[in-house]
Length: 147
Image (tube, rainbow, N blue to C red; front, side):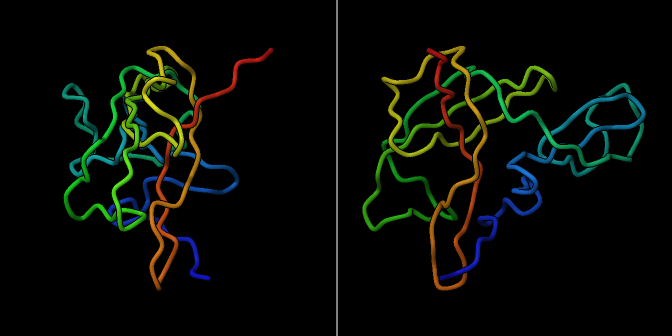
């Protein structure tokens, strides 16, 4: 069985240890948090710092917006099967960092099951598998309401 590896383009964007988390970057000068890592230093226009420190982001957030992907995205997206299966995409607000992060929703969840403001949690899941690796990405999973 191939070993797990980040999907193309997602290297350094998330970790699975000690638990799944997106890896943001915090400016030590002004405290601004960015995801993914900005190419030219702090994204705050009022800050001239070019130093950024990796920082894990909140694992839970609330759906800000969502949609479904009924069409197959273009390359470099690799579908997990020969036939495209629609999936949901959610923009999730991480209130602690004041960021909105876009990502797929776990398989099996439809737009009929999502609502704005719904709590979701970050998980790492296999996007596709080839001879070299199980290519992983982060996804959002709805948090079950306590009964």
